[in-house]
Image 1 (spheres, one colour):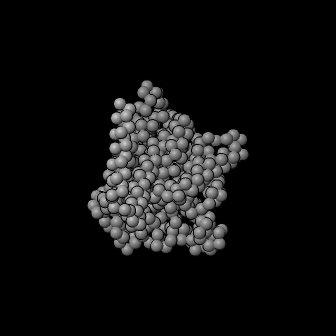
Image 2: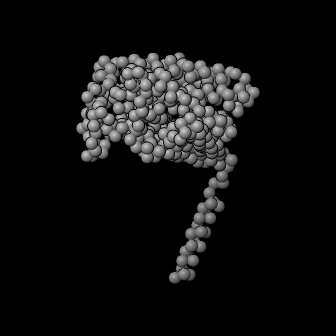
Image 3: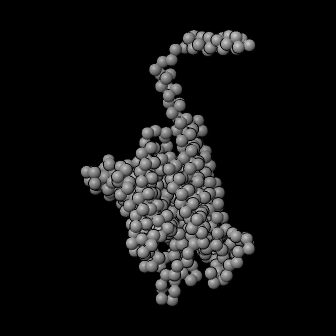
Length: 442
């Protein structure tokens, strides 16, 4: 039996080698074509893996927002995060992708690829880019829900989510990533400190202003009152999921499986760590005890800030960017809460809008090729500032219109009674924690 198996193996080996001998000899051209095809497949696989990593940020946002709000609103928060992705997926496929990456109209907006029509299905990256950009669009919408938590009408929330994912975000994306006017100026926003995070953050700012603070947040004298979230374990797990997903967010934006993705992962990780550490040290010094919630927001601040320049700065610069973001987040949260009296339950405005703007400007200082601190002059910084300013104006203007329309048509804010009762019961008829007693004055 062993002899027969050995003879059969020799036969197969002889047949295989004969095929190689008599087959057409490879040429430089055929080898190059094969290598190019393999690289295309690798690129597609990496983009799809990165898209899955970014998708994991959605439950991360849900846990952070739910944990930083009160128990009587946890179902509402989770539901909004679900709707962000469901609505964002359909609307972005139908309209948003075309406005963002379609044939440019005067450098302002795209005009093709609606409903996926015209996307190159023979190129893996062509169709793979659609799912990758879809999860980005959902992220921009999700940012808004945290700042407007605990008092927003669910119907109105669905209404404005459609416009953010289908219009406001894609237009900015076209300006910077889709061949629009800011990309022609040379603006660098590699993975979206401005395109994704500042868009969501500025919309969150407008929404929080139009909506007004939660009942009981500010006393008669204007003093801010703490309204602690109900589950810091949720928040911590959510931040770890976001940190994990951010490797796909930033390194995936390379859109290729090449050597650059390793350095992007390094700069991303260093900035996150620096942000969390600096926020810890500052709160420890200011308040006498280290503040976990602020440390977690420090991590997110570092991640948001490095997102624009993760492929353009050195590891040392990434540490500095993250550290500065860790300082900014502590004082920004206090500024919006205590000075401007803008009620943002999760710190979304400070994390995403403020640190997103800072991170975009930081590229103008720290980019190894063209940055002010590396001998490149002030031109890149000027372009970055133009980008930050123009996106701010666009998002504030358009989101204000959308929120006002939502308020007129649907009522942006729930009633006082419903807010005190909690949105889980009043909006959904369902408790996040069955049998948990919620009192009206909580």
